[in-house]
Structures are given as structure tokens and as C-alpha cells.
Length: 294
Image (tube, rainbow, N blue to C red; front, side, top):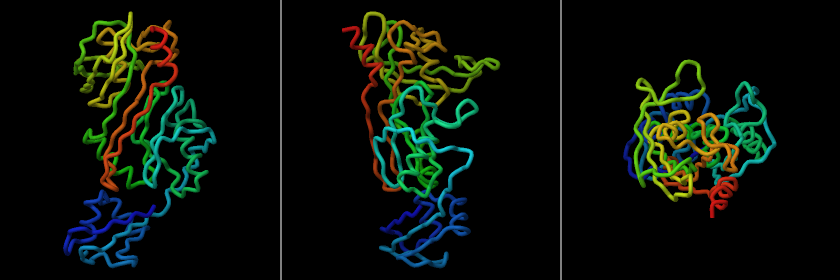
């Protein structure tokens, strides 16, 4: 990984201070000193060098080599956007995000590794910044190297990555707009989450897009990121998602997975200081349910 910045306005700034402003943590700076390269204007420099306006600062990390425990998959991915630092993927439903005991060969991470290898990349440890449940479809942000990962995780911690979802939920009668602020947790060893008094704080905002005879299309925004948050909150309101067997959603509406799609993603690219925004359309199975009603 190699990235270059131009010092626009800092006079006599230390290299560590400058890199810290651009997202290089103390730990990453130490890694650079030990196994990477720091250059100013194309030349390796002493770490006590004082930067002048116009100086070009380049950092070079050694490649993030492949983890032998994470297999390469040659199955395709739907790339919505790509540059040297980021990938935005439209994940299909049914594909697990990360390897686990039940599937270590063909998850989204495995497929991204295979894609990066085909592209000739040297950094082969993709970092998933946003994750989706196996049967949730939609946009996923991936950092291609450690600096992008560090910057994006800061945004996650500060709730600065905007994500919106479409869901088709059972029933009608929801208010046009509301915020669900109910704590979520597990009861015993049950995989299913529930609204419980001692759970983790969770907040979901929603807007009704269209009401049908016995179900509703809603837009949702997560203000926190709890496991199954949308599914739990809508179930707590008495409106489980169509096809969501785990949360007792209707299974007879022509869709065989939870009707949930992450259609909108916006984040600040901390490397270029640009806001990047992406949208994708509803997948065919959710579209078919809506069209069937017309």
C-alpha cells in the first residue's frame, strides 16, 4: 500500500503529527518505522524532518499477505465501485459475509479475496466495514488496506456512515415516520434477539413508503448497529419482515428470505476527503412482491 499527500498549509509540522491528522494511528506509525517506508518529495527522510508547505509525504506499508485460513473463491461479486482504497459490493441474499464454522470456502470475504487476486492486488486481507446478515441483500463497504480500514472504523465508531434499507413488513397502520428506541439483547443461548430491559441501546428510524393490502414498504435508517436490529424492532412493533422465519414473519408472500435490502450507503473517504454516496435498486424478489400487489 502506497499513499501520497501534499502538505497544504502546515509549516514546520512534524511527520508524525502530519500523518496523525491523516488517520495514521500511533500503532500504524510505529509499524511504518519498523517495516514500512516514509518519504518526503520522493526521498526517504529522517523522522525529525520538519515539513514545509508543498512537501509531498509518501508512506509505503508492506503488503497485507493472504491469511492461509481464509480460502480464495472464484465465484463472482457485483462491484458497484472500486478505487485503490475501497470496494463497494452489492451482496446477494443467501451469501454469508465472513467465514465461520459452517462455511469457510465461499463467503463474501472469500469472493473478494479471489477477486483481488485476479486483479493482481498485493494486499490480500479485505476489511469489511459494514456487514449484512446472510439473507439480507445490498451494499457493503470494503477497505482494501489497513489505512482505509482504520479511517472507516473511526467513522463507524462515530456513527458517521449513513446506511438506509428497504424492508417489506407485515401488516398496515404504521405511522408515516417514527423512531424505535428499544434495547436489544439475547435471552439465554437463543440465537434470536429480543427487546429486553437490560439489552443494548438500539435506535431505528423508519418512514412508510407505500402501504399495500396487508403489508407495507418502509425505508429504515440504523442509528445503532445491533445484531438483527431492524428485524427485532419491526417484530416488536407487530410488523415482522415478510419471509423472516426466525422472527415469525409471513412465509406465504412469495419471498423466501427476510425482505430486507441495504440500498443506500454514504461515507467520507478520509484518504481523499470526499463524500462518496451509492444507491442500488430493489432486488428482483422484493420487486416481484410489490408488483404482485398491483
